[in-house]
Image (cartoon, rainbow, N blue to C red; front, side, top):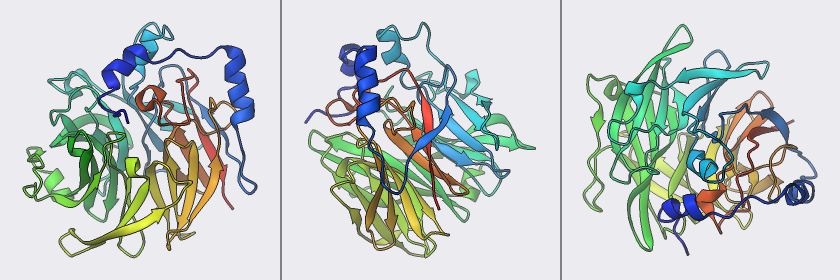
Length: 379
């Protein structure tokens, strides 16, 4: 099967053009299949310049901080859908669902070699600052991805520091007490195999004068920050993705191209001493962003390739809340969902809509030009 990463340069040029208005409306009206118990609705239409949303973080005051890497820029330029690229940035969604720029990356923030920023998953640390995975893999596979910290004063983002270097594809982040867990979606790969994993860093390490420098993964030789590793077949080019903990201290990791979620037992040094399959289901095709709700004792996961969102109980039983066909998301449907977050009883879903990067693999077949978030109202 064609590889996700290897296809990127070709897909940017050759991906098939968007369908006409009639075809798009047919997909929107006929593709949406709503659950009997739940129905996703439109949460917010994103303004111009938000062409690729991804991570969502909950700020201490309840605001939502949205990562906007705008990876769709080149594809949209090639298709004549935009005249100029949109810079990556972080946005703020307040309690009234008003949205605005929260932090615009400065010239000094961009990677000194690639000249790019790729903000993905994000999480506020115990220090009140926002930690963001900066994924550079679309621009270089030579360990250019980073973990960065956006420093916050009185609720306002002021500047950025690089705190970890050496990732190939830093992706998901989650704070467990004073330790930050970060998924590395690509540690090493061959034509038919891929190694990925989860790294851990203490707040003390991340507060040092210099960034932590990861050493490259070499099978039995690896950096001591590595917590757990996974193997998959490289059909998509991405492995470990979403990461979270439950209220019993177990670590959970989605392996997106394998379509499964793993559960790891941790020791006192934040190393996995036992890792086992937690969830696998025919309806669970490509688990991406993952969260755990302590109140409901449920996990919620975005199914990136399947245009679906599922809940999972602590026994690993998968329940599909919403699954639909190839839609634009304009009517509340799921359009390549990448992340989920809970705000009260609202399960908010990020529609990434990045079809050029998953040709032949995803339900979503085109970047529509309409960008949005969806919501499911839970009981």
